Amino acid sequence: MHRTNRRDPADTLAVTHGLFNLVGGLWPLVHLRSFEWVFGPKTDVWLQMTTGGLLASAGAAQLAAAPGPQGPAQARRIGLGTAVTLLAVDLVYVPKGRIRPTYLLDAAMQTGWIGAWLRAARGKPS
Image 1 (spheres, helix red, strand yellow):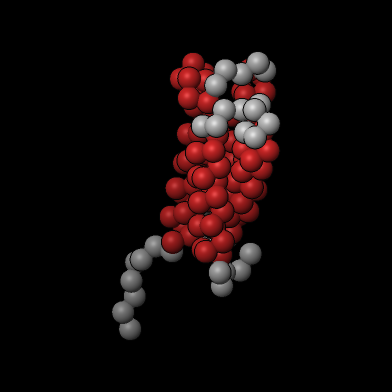
Image 2: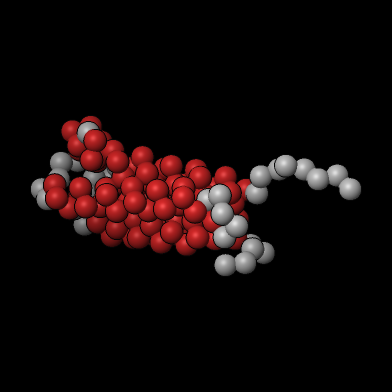
């Protein structure tokens, strides 16, 4: 019997989404000026820093979980939680004018992550 070393798509998704969340969370922490140039100035910088730190932590947790046997399932739970939360914020606060319409680009990305995780989860144990 021939065994392949093909990687499970959920493993790749766990790493990719983890990196996305890690980098996205670190961005305002490392260079707030460029973040605000794209997404608009923030009146409560502490809130942006808190959100960035939590998102970076979620990304780091996804990356740490990825190689284990239950890694993709753990990364999926973290990924879906962050993506649904960020999507809700984008879709509620852009129409209210509280955040810039550029957050709709983030909403599109979060929708993509949700769809990718749901596709990868078909037939997989939680």
